[in-house]
Image (tube, rainbow, N blue to C red; front, side):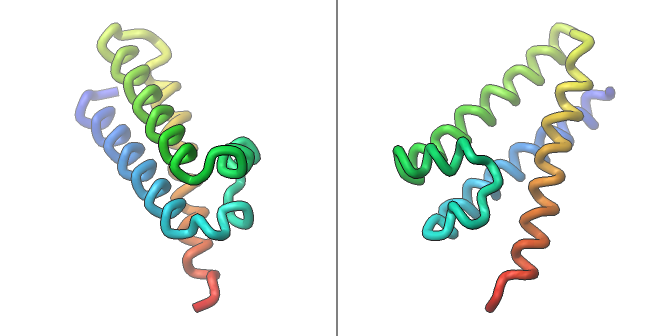
Length: 105
């Protein structure tokens, strides 16, 4: 994977993670109704939205670091890992688009 494409994919991933945090903050009152991840729902119940946002930030930074580390070391997992993480955020983005358009006004 060329570095420019690699950088573009990770930029999208980071942007999607930031939007995910923004969406979570703005819709924190009904988090349990739209959040698909049971661990995040549990974490929100135990520690609140601030803990959830911190967890999302740490995991995004960790995943991005692993991706760039693998790319720097030319490890064979750089491309599959990047594709898997980006795919998760693509599906998440599609989910948000559908949720925003189907939400009552």
